[in-house]
Image (tube, rainbow, N blue to C red):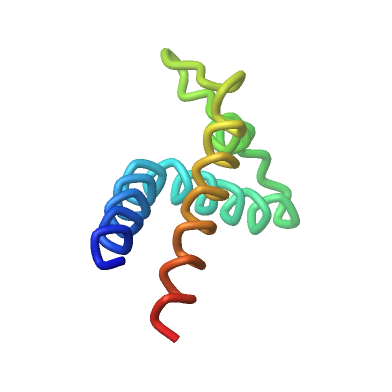
Length: 86
């Protein structure tokens, strides 16, 4: 049981650390864009970042799929870890 718990923690930790930066970029760029738009400032580059287009590196076809799958995996293993603690 303890071995299974540590494996779940390891998976959760790895997936969360890999997806933390892209999630942060998505959250920050979307939030800043939504604040700037009512002010009449059109920062379209923020929407490009929000969707995974970083200029020279265009991850748009995979970016949202990666974020979704990584979030679901982190959520599942996080809930499993919480259930075992209570």
